[in-house]
Length: 218
Image (cartoon, rainbow, N blue to C red; front, top):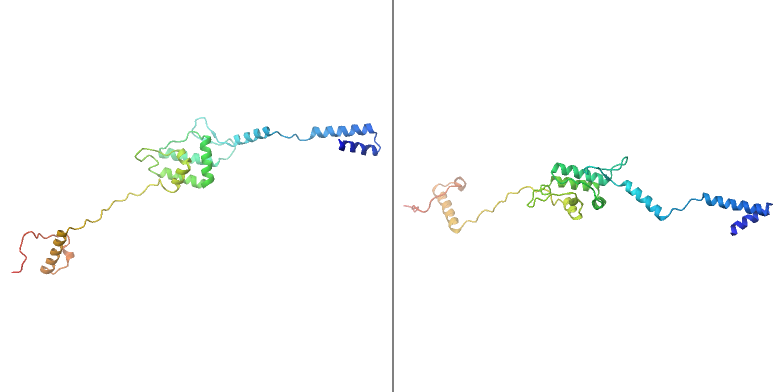
């Protein structure tokens, strides 16, 4: 009110009739109020934010198999992960994800934020190369998208826990000789040296029957 009164007094001092000055100030105040920007309510702000988030989410096609972004938008990181997993699953005989639930989306976003998109795509390739993840295990268990989403199993995949291992042939250590066999070997070697004067290597694998016979000098 003090500002309006000051404006009227200024107009009157400039020679304007007091009543006309009051009308001029009143009309100016009403015009300014009508053209002033309206303040948005908190509910309106939340509604607009919800619509923006909804438009940015990935939508699922009617057949529930292929996942795509809204028309005109580029694929998100989650789209790339789900597409890569679906292709790998088809080639490896694993379960193809039919829908991306809110829980799966949050888990995939966390894995991407923690490890990066290349690491997530690498984990998917490791699953496809793993015989264990493809069901070649004692339970017939097979990996799925939820297995990739879990923090603990995801780290295990990256660390190579499910990578195929080369088959190793077990080699048993040589059996120790008994005292009697060792004595037999020693006599055999001494006889070869005394009778033939040749190295032991030329007689490797040959045996001499010492059960009978007289090897005393005559």
